[in-house]
Length: 447
Image (tube, rainbow, N blue to C red; front, side, top):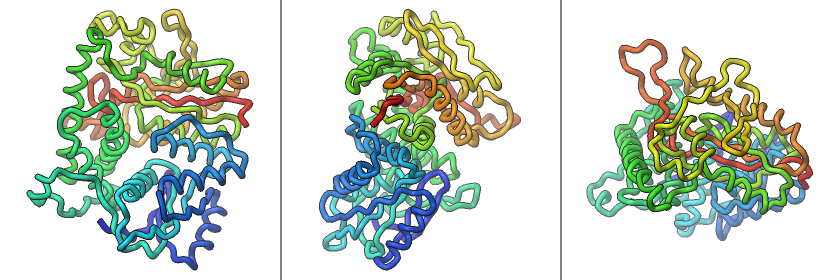
C-alpha cells in the first residue's frame, strides 16, 4: 500500500501533510502560531516508542501532569493528547522524521503504528507532518485470510464521494479488511479493539457518505454477528458469572482508579446515551477546557446490559449482578429532563448510593426535526462545558468518573416517514448501543 500524497486539514481533528527538509521548520512554526503543540519525532527504531518518548519529554518540559495508568495504544494516545491540551495546545502535531523503510518498505510493526496514527487524525485533535522522502514508502496493511487473496478480492477500489462533496480517502479499506478478517469467536479484548479501531470509524465513514458495497456488507455482518453473540452470551452471565466489565461495575471501577491515584473523594457522573465516539469527542474538548485543573487518570470501555435502555442500566447499578437473572421485566421508565433543564447535572439515588446524571445527550437526540447525526459535535461541546462547570464545585483531588449508560445507533427511516433520512435507535444489541466509554478525571491539586 503506498501512502497517499494528499494533504488534508480538518477543523475538529488534525492536519496530515508531507514536507521537505527545507519546509519542515517553517511548517512547524506556522502550526505553532495557530495554537498547535508540535513535537519533533526522530524515527529509526520503534515508531510507537519514539512517539511516546518524544511527546512525554516535551510535556515534562512544559510542566504537564503525570501520565495516566493507560496501557493500550488508544488509552496512551488519548492521555498524551489530553495532557498536550492542558499545556494550551489545541492540536498535538507529530513531526516525523524520515521513516527509513528498507528497502523502501516500512516493517510490519511500524506500519501498524502509522496506520493507527493516521486513523486517529480523523477522530482526535492530532496531526502528522511526514517527510517528503516517504511519499513512495510502502506500508503493510492488516493481515487477511489467504483464501481471500487467492480469490483476488484485495484490489483497490475508489471511495464514493461524501454528500458534502469532500472526497473520503482510502483508509476505510483497512477498517473493512480488519472486520472481514475477524470471523468466528473472538476474545473480549479483540472485539473491543475492533470496535474502537475499525467498526466505529467505518460506521462514521458510511454515515458521511461512503457507499462502497463491500464496506456496507462487512459493517453489517460484524454488527449482526456481534448482536447475536452478545445476546446469546447475556443469557449465561447470571449462571456462569463470566461477563465483561459492565456499566453496573462503574462504582467498583471508579473506586479502583481512585485508590491508584490517591484521590480523596469519588463522584460518578452518568451521561445518558453517551456512546463511545461521542465520549471521545467530549474527552478531547475537556482537555482544552480544564487545562491544568485536572488530569486524565484512566479510561475504560463498559458493556451495557440488555436491553440497552436507561432504565435497565439504572436497575443494574442499583441491584448489581443479581439483576441479570431477570429479563428487565421490573424496569420502570426513567424520567429524563428536557429543554434547558437537561443542561444541569442532578443527583439521584441508585440503590444505597448516589450518582450524578446529565440528560443532555438523550434530550438532544429526541428533539424533533433535523438530522440527528449533525448534533453530535455541538452536543459534545455543550456536554464538556457542563462537566467543566460541575467540576468547579468539587473539592481538590476528587476523582470524577464520567461514563455512559448505553449508546445509540443511526438507521434509515422508513420511506413513508416524514423528517430526516435517519432515525436514532436505542435498546438493541448493536455494538454502538452496547459499548460505552468511561473516563476518570482527577480534579484539582494536579501537578
